[in-house]
Length: 249
Length: 366
Image (cartoon, rainbow over all chains, first blue to last red):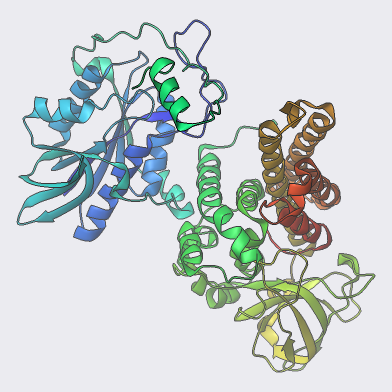
């Protein structure tokens, strides 16, 4: 099975994020960049599918600056077969990303696209769904289990109040949830091999796609500082305060 | 040109080691320190990383990664940041395999390296230190006497990591009255090899160490590492020191970060204690020491990677790091105050581990 895994570069979740004074973005100096954790889960799942089936090809794809190679190399070190970097220096919104990925899908013709349900930087949760719609493919979002039987893909999703299982034919788009698997570490031999694997670069502008942003970030602000808690004498006082001060009941 | 920028490959090795240290080594460290055995799952996960296999030549089933002391130093720092004892345990097989890769005869490489290419943890070790008050690397007293059909080894070694678990041990000894140190590959089961019960150490409890006695131990004529050409022992000793310094930096960084974060949270007299100069100065000094250790390790490693002698640089670095790791971990206990002394926090464990690092030699190699 040929699997395409779109991968986004994001700040390490352990990093303290600081918003720039003018609110135009976040301070990126001293930030450590990693593969979006949900995408890492997608890579791991693709590797497991390939290992289980005994054959297949895993292609990674990122859309961004030349430095995004670092995360693609890490994915290759985990075990993916090759990678494509669609180079773009301008920030792209989710629609443009989905359009580029659809173009890559049309060129590569994978049987399955697996990607994180969302990136942990902007938490948009849109690209997978948009891709499926544009491709006219079935989609299964928030997968916590993926199986293949009788030529169909069966995905378990964690939904409010329980688990939902859906089955659909391939090709399809699946987005991963946190509990799908625990990604492996890139092994040192894997890191060695990654150097020799193909990493193809394509210029986004050369794809003939409308990349004009439909979404504009007006301003970023840091969340308000949490205020210190208060101790109350009695339950009655608590209820009273929740009503009068916090206005939650 | 001097560059502080790791290559892409070095950065990936650092990242993967750092993630492994944070997620696997650190959470397991305390239980192992309290006497539990290292979980099988942890050993299996570490084996998958390929801490030995990656550097084995391809003809012996490895991946043929180019050996670099600098890359080794980066790897060791990250692993020791997770836990020094576990890092030393998991990398101990390198003490056996690496000198054979670099200086062994082709027959020795074919014979001894294969097991390390498997995906499983294979113990390996080398014996350097001797239980004498005046021990130093120039006055190794273990001797190897050449007989008609082999070598006879006599002497005593101590703090030999994983001696009881390893098939063969690389023993450093002197040939008769000659200057210079040679290596001998000694099967654990050879007649005349006596391995003690595990030593009971103050720290580093995740690393089993043993005394090894050699009493008229007879081994084959081809057991000398490197054959008649012998080995460059000074280079091996430097590689060991660089590993120790890098690990000291990792251990100290763990202690520094823990103390720093604690000091930012812990409030006394209405403010976090990190805002008090007595604490802030201590933390600043700790941060300086960590960087200093790393830079000294890197400089010595840089010489080694150029194929140069690094005896002076590695020795100065080791001397500095021995004292420095102790100082930083002790300061970490001090910053935590009473909490630093109790076992709920890892800093007392790190202090005990640092003490071990300061007096031990030959526990790791880059």
